[in-house]
Length: 112
Image: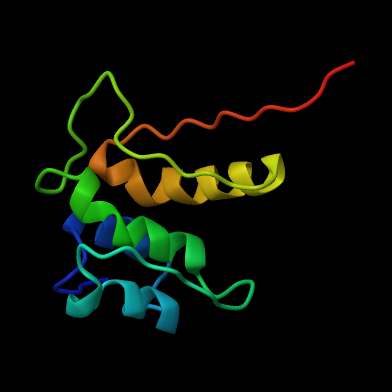
């Protein structure tokens, strides 16, 4: 998939997943007016929000088309449930794999 506002590493991952076009929510977060801004995204389940967030944060995470080596986290995603945290992690793993990024999931919970 080619798009002037998508890093080539992410475009490679999208193409490998069979993306021909972006969903409306994904297209909205990479518009020029959204660049560098805090975003609140509301859309139906299955609309591509997780990939949209991944696309939106790429400018802050990538140097060129690669994730820089760092001892500290470059980004943090907080999800309300462990199931959603795992789902988000899996989506970001394939999206950022060509950029060499490492995505780690940390979840908590009560044990008895």
